[in-house]
Image (cartoon, rainbow, N blue to C red; front, side, top):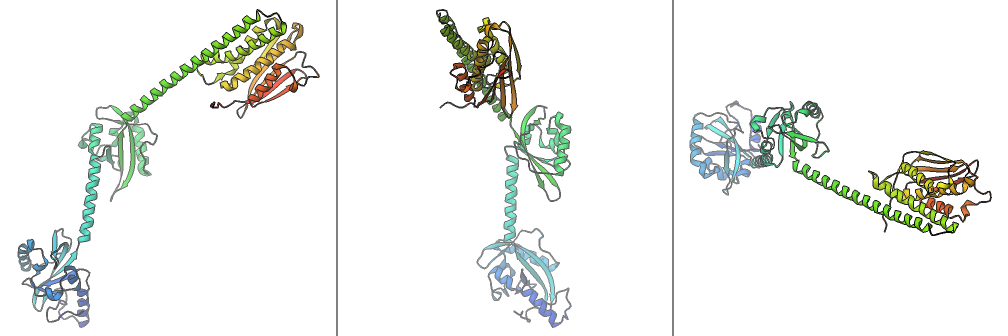
Length: 493
């Protein structure tokens, strides 16, 4: 497209020689026509002398509709009168005015709609006198982006100021640069008292030295740390009182500096609630323990009643075999009752000090068979282990059976001898129980696995109940070796 040369010679502004070559003229005409901004040339009377293609597109007029019209046809009516005065003043003292001078300017399309613009003005000299070249840029999108940025900034400012948590901005020197209203409420300082103060002003004195080191380390290698990261943190109010807090730290890269955003939450109520829950749980555990102790106590008492009944019954029995059965039954009942008594008296009602139990059990067994063991010596090598009741009861019955059998059969005619009881952990949650004596030994023809002896059958059944293994050795002394692990408690269906 070529400009009408009889209208204006735009190839000859004040900075261009009027004697420009045709090639130069052609270049400038193309620059004019295809410039990305709308270009409007206005004469000294304010009439439009020429426009380019972008101006037609921008304003919705054809150039034939615009040429010869006052430039105010492109300006909203509410600005027209003022613009005429400004135009006349400009023509009186023309100068280059670049775009982006922060003027709030609007243009008007053919359909009457308005849009924001930036305008650059340049005076030019032509054969027809001085004219003004106006480069017009549609900044609708730019204004939209600015509006979004302002809206985002407004939202951020409101979120910052009215957040339910205290928000503190800390510079790289560790000093507070900004704080919100909740910070004032939480710590009792005004923000003017906090600005430019080291963040340690809000931290208890006993943590200050350590915190300075932590703060320097964080600034050198910043990372986001979420709230509730398992740290016991405390804040300090203006009056010196302390309170528990959660803190979230986020590094933020600003245009010229890096800052740290600290979000602080007062968790006093949460901590109070947690303490109440913990106290309730302690009370519940205490009540549970009291109930379990009471249960063990009642079971022990009931078993003692049974043992007493067996003892009383034996006073009316003359048959030796029957009397022996009653006495054996009594020792078995007492071995179980002793476990419940130990648990009842223990601080740990879940686990029994089994070594201590074995020592007391041996005393009870020897007391029951007091007429058979005047010349016996008992040796114990018992390591301290703690067992649950599901393991302790069958193991206690096994010890009762094997010691009782030794007292009844290993040393006839009250002959002297020795008995050994050893209990040791083997590792991997396994244990070893060994009971041996240097008495007369087992009969040579005895197949202990098929014996009809109630005591040995009980020992084998109870070992099986423990999921253990039993071995019997007869030389040079009789020894029962039982390997077992602790049974895991199972809920009864």
